[in-house]
Length: 341
Image (tube, rainbow, N blue to C red):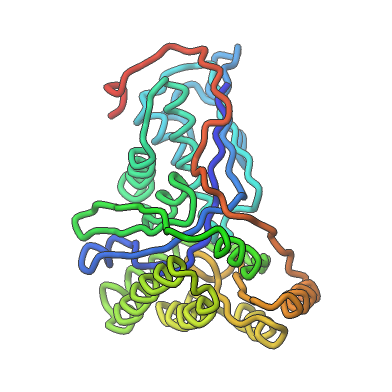
């Protein structure tokens, strides 16, 4: 049996500059933080000579080509999984389509699990690169690359997306005191709105190609990402709210799909009840609302206001391990890296 655990994430700054249409021209710069909310992948050998896949649906097929789940199918093909009698199961701590990067965390965790199943050693860069290859190249899904890399590496990390396609991931040099402050000051509330992130990302890509306004705001967001990394590194955590507020203002101008009437009303309610700033996590349109409040009294008032709106809070700490193989029984044939295509 193989079990992997892969974190979800929040973007602290620079989100959107990791899409290919932007970073190929200007380079991207994102600061993200992994959370102790996880996707779990289990691979188990079965006596039944079939391939069983269990996620929100259940599949029983005879070959990888027959698998309906696109990520599972393509990952199995890349690893040349021809075994019958294999079962792949996934579990998640939070719902999908909520802006925390769950789809890419699933892909990263699956790759780590399949690598362990094949007896392969893969670096975090190799896992993230393969996840991007599956999602962005093979399946041609719209979106950026930060989710795959932060899921693989974990921590509070700076990611530089180079015009040539290279990615450089570096841990932000941040003090324990600053980490504690961020964990206390940032609150996450589920809006109850599920959204199709790919449609929001497609709107962003169209904007990059056609609209100067979108490019101007992505330039602004990238600069904010650089400044946010600086204040985290220097311990000026009190300044984060100002940058977060400006980040949300710029993000809303990327496309009409980022916000809506309910999100706007919830945000205004939060500001009226102790929040100093906030934004929707992920591409936008729904999912989790990230709010900031550095005062304990205001945080309690904010929690009560969001509870009155029937929003559930997601309590979290930061994860510093990235994708991890929790269980590997080692009972399988060992293969070499040549097994990958």
